[in-house]
Image (tube, rainbow, N blue to C red):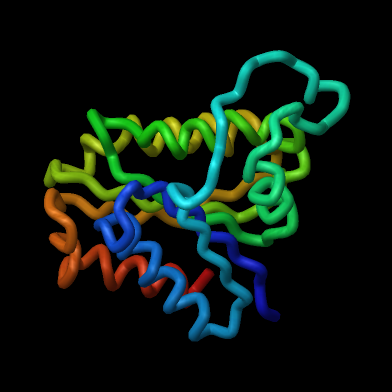
Amino acid sequence: MAKKILVLSGSFRKHGNSDLLCDEFVRGATESGNDVEKIFINDRKINFCRGCGVCNTTHKCVQKDDMEEILNKMVAADVIVMATPVYFYTMNGQMKTLIDRTVPRYEEISGKDFYFIVAAADGNKANMQKTIEGFRGFTDDCLPGAKEKGIVYGVGAWQIGDIKGSPAMKEAYEMGKNA
């Protein structure tokens, strides 16, 4: 049965390394007959959470930006892929802002399958663990029943396109194919 897959690309650079890994995941998932949508977060307007607390009772954010649409898609998805370049050993600000803005409906994101994609200039996967722990803080601690299904580590990729031809490209494709 086809799954509804949402890929959230946190890259600032279209066709940057983490974005290229997203494309490979999308290619594999599409070839397997899934319904796949990729959102390039940098193309969207997502304001910082103000911490006003209104959404705790209304389940609606007071801000009018693109986050409501993204959140609706997250709620509707069976599988969510979260991808980020790694800056100073953690996810970039755009991805963190997106996570912060899920508060109005985060309980509705529970029970989904999650994949994480990270890309960094550092060549050591172990140094990406702080980023993965940031994602896990969201999925494991806030989303009951969320299941981590896989991680793609795009390491040793500094310049745009460095990830091409790396084992991570094949891993992303295979994870998408088996999502």
